[in-house]
Length: 478
Image (cartoon, rainbow, N blue to C red; front, side, top):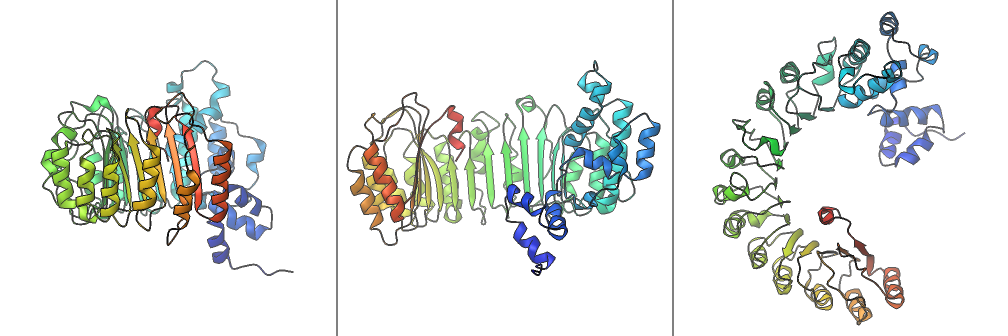
């Protein structure tokens, strides 16, 4: 009879398994099943199983309030599933409760469910059990301001929420919820806030009491455009700050104080109050900044250049999805010599600056090139990649707004190009992807497909992919 691996070793192995493989492990033995189910049930997998886990007194309360659960719920569960839960989505639980009681109320509006007595009593007993039996790491909570869900104020809530490290929430939660979280959760590492119509009292306090927070993500909608600044400060422990959508007036003075910032991501418009005022940050210095992303608009060139002059040396990852002046690419090579990954635009189709980038950025491993409405000389492009790309380079992604390659694309000497790549020392397998939103297909001849497969077998090519985009916004999808 084979000996079992120790539980900690088995758990370490199972962490790397895909869901299908992990499900197979459930059937091997009870020991394997228990190890697997601990991983599965980090998030709630089945609402009916959650009901089965309710204590007997809770089931009695449900019955007394006219809530009938299946006879199978009276049987004890195979495992104590709730103690495995580490990640909780409040809204998913609410939706599950609504689906559970839906057959009883055929003509009631969905919003009225959350005020329904059956809904409230089920929610109260479930959250009472979770607060008493779980120790959460992640919590997601987006329900509306006017709904005071019975989530907290139960025995065990201190132990349940004390070690919470990640919170995703709406800005308009019921104020008491924010105050409760402010009292119990002081060890958040990551906080993501989706801003709706308003900001509830207590949100600013929740942010201010965090002593170890590293990541802050703020997602604003257009409805927020003319509203007041929701924060008076950002914790200086932040290493990652992401602000996206809407016309939020960026608090540049608060951002400039974040001396520990390693990643800054801004996805806003170029209007006044947004990236138009990036000049206020151009002279700021972030000694630890490694990742800089502008995933929507892009600051005016002169302000961005000055910012890169002050902060580009330590950058490893730079994303610019919309630039007007292609000469900015020359400054990338000048001020960002240690880049490993770059996404930038070639608005006029001129790829000569790519040579400058390759020569200056000797650590570069991947590049995403976004082209506008100008034609691209595909042979010249690959010639530059083969001849000038750094030794560590292995991935090229080309984004085309319109069809610029003829239908006979790649009918020129593709073999000679790939042979030169294969002869590089060292030769790292190249991944090449071309995406276009053109209605015309970019075609490869059968002979060139054969050549590509040949060089894949030789280890010179890892991937060669051509894709027609359904939407131009798909450019950010790898």
